[in-house]
Length: 458
Ligand SMILES: [Zn+2]
Image 1: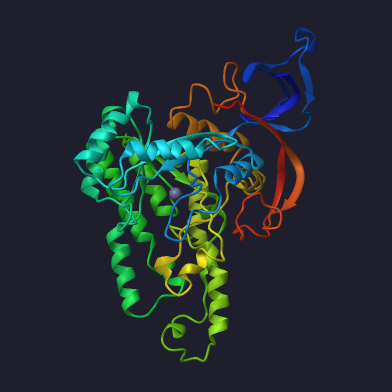
Image 2 (image 1 turned 180 degrees about the vertical axis):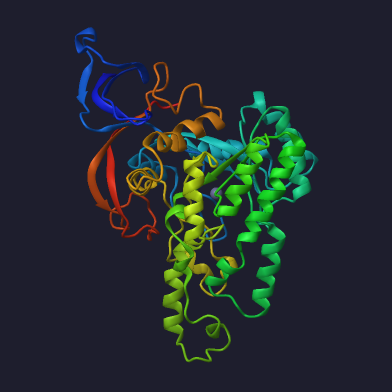
């Protein structure tokens, strides 16, 4: 039976709390408001008294089974989507990441097959890992009627998937013809590369040097350049995982001057900070153990840091506050997770003694809603409605699903989360749904939990 009445729920898309009923039929929202169950014979009634009703979460930035030299990111489409559902996310966007030389069509077909195992709705952004005549013509045929509705590019990772600024400009010119948004990983690849070379030549190879090779300026400079390209090309850009207050401010200023730019941040940049990289033995440990630190102690320190090796890295508390403010005042539009976990043992530790070999990324797909509810809404940093927009309505609108997902409206897909705000939990590697052997939010206390998810499969 596929007909439900949710009674007395508290919709999260309103400015105040007000009880409403929702009628769901065949995976669609039929009605909302005050509903007389007698008008709907044969519908199953679900009492949602006191619980919040969210539109299903949409996470537009996850990397399941992402191939890297250290192996695939350790959540595949089965475990990753299971974790998504546990956190109230009913739609994910993953990426096609063509290898250099590989056809976009082939990469897309392979990725579509893999993503078919997802238990939640899954769409794919098309990654552009190199730029030449063949890639350009393939992309041109895929945009618009070809079914690709968003493009992803990297200014970092120059050796593997990154492209140059003048190439990005051409991608944006092409995408602007179909109104397709281009997502950009904004970190200045040249600056990072030169710092990596410098540290390497100085024998500075422990994990903390990853953090030091990716300073805030690398992000800020790249965001400035990309915003300028958006202005010149008229292309809509979406800046992923903004980690700095200054980066968010550039997006805010660009919006005010009419440039079509959207900004995303992630829970890790809102709730974790660079103190996790503290390493009291730096720099002596890298210069022949002059202070007598033994190897085991040094490695323990490195293992503690490894789970937090992400790009961009974590920043200051001052940046965190800036990002929260930017979420509240509309400067930033989306909170995604950039879910991309790697096991500590056997994957992250491949780079124990060479930070350039550490696979970058961490998990978080199942914690977005509970973390933002607990540390955002309950701490009065963002309203409940703003939370609902940041995790559902806005990503739906930006990535072409806005006419059927992201809102609790009659006619929309019944991707719905019933959220019990009273449950208290502590996040731990012991109880998370991800397949990862470590957890960057270990010990975080959270309020609220998914009571039940409804989902209309694509
Ligand atoms: Zn990413």
